[in-house]
Every structure is written in structure tokens, then in C-alpha cells.
Image 1 (spheres, rainbow, N blue to C red):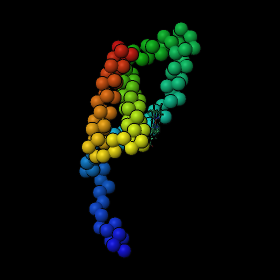
Image 2: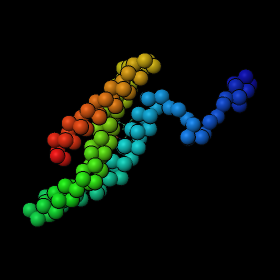
Image 3: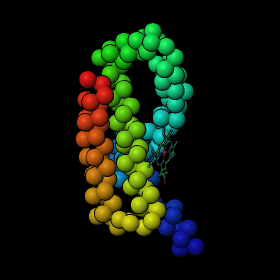
Image 4: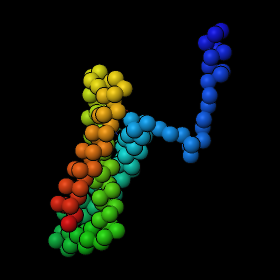
Length: 130
Ligand code: HEM
């Protein structure tokens, strides 16, 4: 009964514009969003990859599309999504093994995931796209 009263009194805030998530929360949402976006884009990416391998002409077409600055920016975003998902995924696997589950470590590991994925994106993005 006391539990019921406690549950009823818990404050609710469903206004997305005023919710202030801590960094691990933002990381968690981005991990889900990146997983979904990567999954949805897989057919397009595989089609582009296949087209680039079909012939020298189709490779040149894909190359010229990828040379456009806007496409480069989109590809850079995709590289970051993948690397964020990858690094956050490793963090989740460690959490599943009960490594770094206290609040301080969880906050630190979220910062590390953001830092590592951004640095890797810049290194790989610049090398591959420019
Ligand atoms: C194109 C490649 C990938 C796609 C499309 C993909 C997609 C997804 C999706 C849709 C989810 C569910 C997210 C959710 O609902 O919370 C997920 C979860 C997960 N992914 Fe990936 N993923 C990919 C690559 C990877 C890689 C390379 C790793 C390596 C670390 C990874 C690690 C994980 C983990 C650990 C989870 C579960 C996280 C949790 O416990 O909530 N994924 N992935």
C-alpha cells in the first residue's frame, strides 16, 4: 500500500524540451538511434558498395557522388554514427560484465566514448574522405 502511494506521488515530466538527461542517458539514446539508422541505411550502403565494384565506370560514378562536399558531410556523419555505436557497444558489453557500473565510472566511460568516437571519426574521416 505504501508503495502504491509512493508511486502515485512520483513527479512526471514528459516534456522532451525540458528534460535534462545526464551524459550516459544521451549516450544511450544515441546508441539506439545510431543502431536504428545504421540498420535502415544498410541496403543503401550495400547497394553503393556493390555499384562501386560492378565496373570501372560505376566505380567512377560512385566516386564522383562521394566527392560532393554535402555527400562527404553525410558520410562523415555516418562514420561517426557507426563509431559511436561501436564504442558505446563496447561500453555496454563491459557494463554487462559489471565493469564500471558505479555512477562515477559510468559518467567517465560515457565521456571516453564521446571523445574516442569523435577523434576516430576525424582521423578516419579525413583519411578516407579527403
Ligand atoms: C551496421 C552495424 C550495426 C547495426 C545496424 C547495429 C544495430 C543495432 C541495433 C538496432 C541495436 C538495438 C539498439 C536499441 O534498441 O537499444 C543494437 C544494439 C547493440 N549493438 Fe549494434 N549494430 C551494429 C554494429 C555494432 C557493433 C560493431 C557493435 C560492437 C560493439 C555493436 C554493439 C551493440 C550492443 C552491445 C548492443 C546492445 C546495447 C544494449 O545493451 O542496449 N553493434 N545494435
